[in-house]
Length: 285
Image (cartoon, rainbow, N blue to C red; front, top):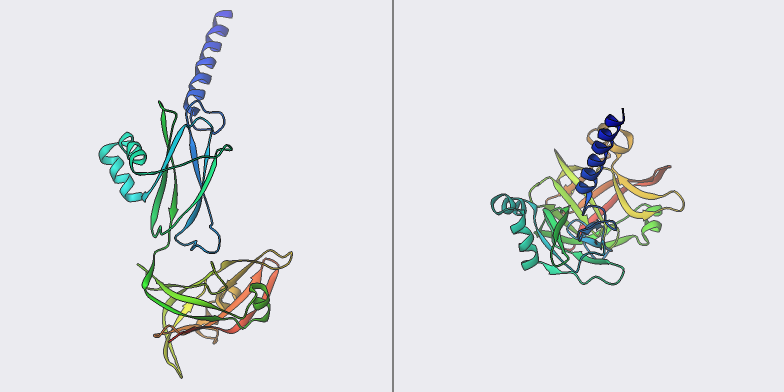
């Protein structure tokens, strides 16, 4: 019996050692190897959250040097596939930006202009050992060459109070690869946007022909008292019935010159804050 107990104890010890070995270098604060872990956060309002990210690099205290490199994810994966991960680690060190950690081991920066899927890779070194970590950012590519500058006008009084104004300078932009997807950048102030998607349906009014569009449910960077985050959507999403958009006269429309009329409902988790018939985007020219 003792023989089998000794064998079992040996197996358990071996399994425990293997488990610990696999985890070395992966848990900040307890690692034998240098580790720097990157985290993504939304940047402050002077940046464009669709293409910019605030990145926090956290060291486990074992790294004497660290570098980060921003590159399209597809390019990174292709290079690793052809040259190997060790070669890519050396590339990050050679071409990347060195991180100067303060005493607490946390460094933050804002990385901009990432329109597409990017990897932010970071290599940590203690002079002998090197480890690489990464975080991925999926940036939305907007076609800035066809941007239309103008003013976003808010009709709903409650929404005006929440955002602090009845209108804001704004820019209408179309997605770089999806011609049906748009945003009004700055609709509710700096760092905000209203996104919408055109559908295959047209109407006509005094300004001419317009294309119907849908406003999916989207959170705005504002809160209303103790009721939490303010969101916006069109009447179809509000009522759970697309006929409100196509048949009942609550459509939103985009004209060829960029002029928009926008039937939008503002709401919090507890209920409606009212709606606008209509908000407008008015081009400068």
